[in-house]
Amino acid sequence: MATMHFIQQGKGGVGKSMIAAILYQVLGHLGKEVMAFDTDPVNATFKGFKEFDVNRLDILQNGDIDPREFDELINRIAELPAETHVIVDNGASSFLALNSYIRENDVLGILKDSGHSAYFHSVITGGQAVADTALGLRSLAPGFPDSPIVVWLNPFFGEIRMEGRPFEEFKVYQEFGNQFYAVITIPQGNKATLGKDLEILFAKRQSFATAINSSQSIVMRSRLSRYWNELVSIVDQAAIA
Image (cartoon, rainbow, N blue to C red):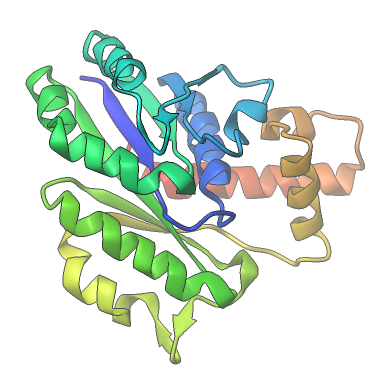
């Protein structure tokens, strides 16, 4: 069966496209066939990775989902061969509209009847956006009570805590933790070294393979190689492949 990965978060600029890019590369590295779509109507960051085969899909028209575009996507997915993974990176501006469309048209039921499965992926980030991202996850979870959610913790902007409490003590975790199939903490390192390496890599929309095999300094390539191996390990352990 094919597996859908919907990257969803109502807060922009928190790392959704980075997660999509990580998934695309790790799943491919693990030998999976991967299809990818960028549906962000404002910032098509995922499509900007020229090394990846990402399809641009304009799903939002006048603030609502264009059913012709998304219906065609679901038709294509329903006919996919087994073991294919499909990544849909969605923007914050179409977060509510896409979720409503998926519910109202029983998209998950259609996929299930075709023998496919689906995960929702959402990100919780540290720093000032922690409350907003928790609210975005809180908006997503009750709408899809039977669908597994993969939560990605992104501490790049700061420690992931609210009122001194870790994520496992957040209200959203207490209410919907049974839906969380996996909680993945994006690994961090020294911001002056590895942090800068990653900033350059994502600013260039560059794959890890290209950066690791480039002519950049051997120390930088070594840091990125170790980080890449760690990413592969944590995604593999999450058992979403």
